[in-house]
Length: 166
Image (cartoon, rainbow, N blue to C red; front, top):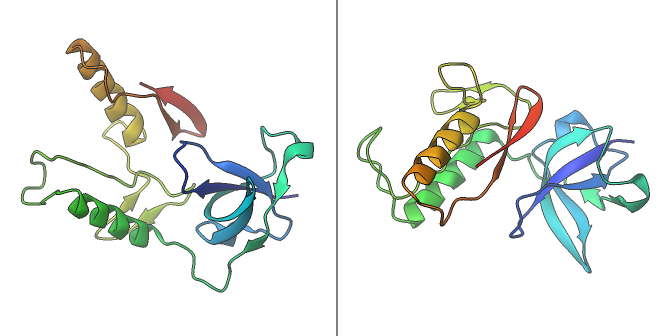
């Protein structure tokens, strides 16, 4: 039975697994209704898998994949990220200039995507997922300067395996 990994707008950095017998690969990016605690939540399907770290007896079933709405597209997500940057005061005057906030879309499931505005996954010059390299360098730099506040482990996926970087 397919298992969907769902992002829900809650203050934790994790995806939530649900059984979804009717889910297919074309549902990645679609919104989904799921039970969440004592409420029903709307999430976004980010992955579909055959396995979960959650025991099958504890997996809840998704209530409904919202196929009446178009799936969330990578460029739509990028537009929302740029809007959040503007709301937080970012002004894009210079391509590689200083910034108070920088939100990037690094990957979209396992899809490859390329337009004039967006290339996914975002790789660095060595072919690694950009987030793993830049976050690791940033963390080392901050630790070297004695900055601890605001740094937290980040789970980054690269080459089919997950790594935690500080």
